[in-house]
Image (tube, rainbow, N blue to C red):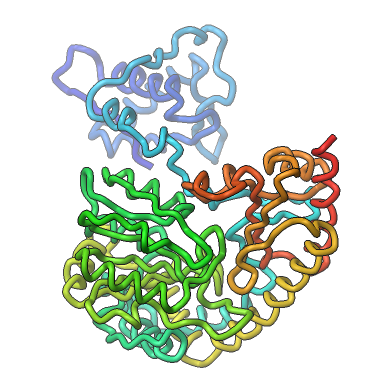
Amino acid sequence: MQLPLSIDASSATTLQSQIVAQLRALILDRRLAPGAPVPATRDLGRQLHVSRNTVTAAYDELISEGYLYTERAVGTFVCKTLPDTLIGHAPARPEHRSGSLHRAMNLPLPYGGRGLTGLHRPSSPRLIADFVFGRSDARNFPEKIWRKLIVECLGGAAERMSEYIDPAGLPELRQLITSRLGPTRGMVASVEQVLLVAGFQQGIDLVAHLFVGTHTPVVMEAPSYRGAAFLFESYGAHIIPVPVDQHGIDVSRLPESRVKLVYVTPSHQFPTGVTMPLHRRLALLEWAAKAGAYILEVDYDGDYRYDGAPLPSLQSLDRNGCVIYLNSFSRSIGPGLRIGYMVVPRDLMRTAVTIKSLMDNGLAWLEQAALAQFVRDGSFDTHLRRLLHANEARRDALVSAVRSHLPSARISGADAGSHVLLTLPPEAPTAAAVQQAALALGVGVQPLADSPAWFFEHLDNADRCLLLGYTHLTEAQIERGIAGLGRAVGMARI
């Protein structure tokens, strides 16, 4: 360990006194924490180009003052309790910082400083059912096969781990992704169009890099995902919220003026859960071609369709190269994997890869290699089929429980995805009041104001809407949770 000490041999102050003063300052400022070790006298002498005896004398002085103590044959450490005489001698923290740090701390944050996406929610063991959005079931993670693949990939990892890889991602994984996109999304794309990213949020960030600057007009669904809204806002975008109806974004209400970017979730709109039908998709593409706008298609729940066949993606219908497709393995394997992918129009790919290289110089090789093998040997398809079957059973349990315990409530988005939007009747208490009553019964629910949703004021009865994630819960937990929610609605009326 090297300490940030600087010795001036030309100073009138002795070398020993300089060492003592600087070490004392490090301790008082808590940069050397109580109980922390300090370097051996020989090592510190070598670092500072002074004799070992000088360092030993400095340590002895600090020991006598109560700053350091020595354990024989172990080392020298900062005292865990400093002497009372030190109280009041610690350097005061400046109330106002200056320079670049001060400027950075005072930069305007998007939407009044509420810059978090709202996806990180610590689990609470005291809840009998937590209908939080975005969590996957840890019991479904293919731990055994994933451990095996990691070990296999490590067998030849020395060379690959010792060099940077293509910032666009591991070529073999990108190729496997393109092979899947044809049968699952109706897409025809080359490996040169596929770009791997660290999940949805980095993909949205990359698109913002491509298109958004100060006052850039960006259309977003209303309601929509606040992690995207906040990010676009942080780039200076002028966001234009366009309401969603039962078919997704209302194309007839899109602005006539030129728009740079449109953000949509057509497979399972967030948070309403509606699916955009084919005629609306074609209308949106026609509008984008006339307006000269690009469409960011976020297919965050496209792997889970329970009723009917999935519709072709917007990208597969695009004939003008205006759709950027974004998906991730977060919903299928787990958000902790942090691997997503984009399909980018050919004329944007070179710029997109350049931006990606500035962001991170590529994702971790080992996880990409393991995922490639997971897809290649068919394990991913097997895993996905099991998830689809399990999640459909959970969906059925949720719908049945709501019909039994909350018959007057309305469910949106149950035909696909990993969440539904539950709308309480107008005579019911507000969602915020129900949330508090439900917590007392051990049930966690999210009103839209406490969820990752944004622009939700455009929804009818928005103050009585609850976002319910369910694919991480068992069917028994879902039943108990919805039963508790039904009781909570009755309690909140009192």
